[in-house]
Length: 421
Image 1 (cartoon, rainbow, N blue to C red):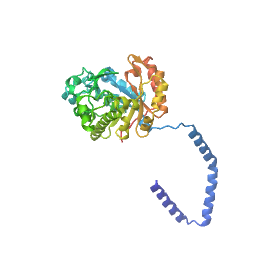
Image 2: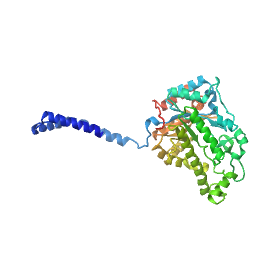
Image 3: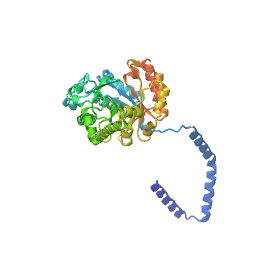
Image 4: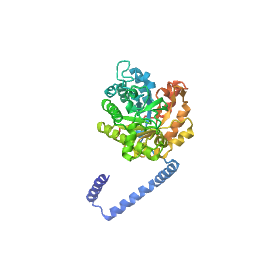
């Protein structure tokens, strides 16, 4: 701006010199400009009035950069009937593009198994759950290729994190990797049923997770990687032999009997944070523009009950995208949760969205509920991601055409996203 002004000033001085202005000419010029400005005064007044009116009518909001608005959907293992077939993948991607979605989150780690051909998994004695599609294709590569052709980002979703079923090959082959409660119990009940938890403090567990993540980031043209609320540990766990010895060595004390003891909670949460920092650095070293995405529960619950200090992750700058899961059937509870201060804090620096439940096979969600929640999020400058693809319209209480038309009204115009800069 300063440079352009300098050039204009030079042209002005040259013009003045060439015309040999005298004082009378300058007076005439000033009078002429005054008459011209007088004619513009009514228009300037109108513009000023409109500006004041519009400013008063706007509700203050923390807005994201528009091109970074999240309009996403998770693709789970329930969606493998779609993912296995190229034609169905093409149909799905076309639907999402037509309805102005911009991001797909396909599962790649579920129930202790990978969803792609993996040398890392083979070395750990884990067989792929689904390795090839009906035409022998790599289903993850196919989804990425077809999505990118339509301008959709693909951010694979590391769904189960440190969680695994007790009957999985991972749990059976590596019992030394599991953590436990103070009473010796190794399992807990989750939305996925009875599960065990890999010890997030054990170096071999950390190495497995790191290798799997880097394998995805380096072998596929992904736009990022996502970790959800299972990249954590329920607060009752951590009383296994390895963790007890580590805590005792570092603090000179035995772990407290109360699993919610603040010092014990913080020590374990800090260990998980340190691992996530290292994981972020490893990902960025391989692919600097990869989006490091996190989709946790709201912060109070995540920290107190799952030792997941994602607000610290955010403040340490390792989170490029945040999607907070708010699966609430009633609107007042939903609105209360999306208005939390930590979500507002995230909006100031990174693309931020809300995870919205669009239904389960045994619990479909009506379109009116989805619409009201999306609008509440959008009014607060938040993006959205839906759980999950099949429930958008295939497993829904309304007809497919009505359902798709309803989603079209939520995103009436395209919104492409850019990678991390």
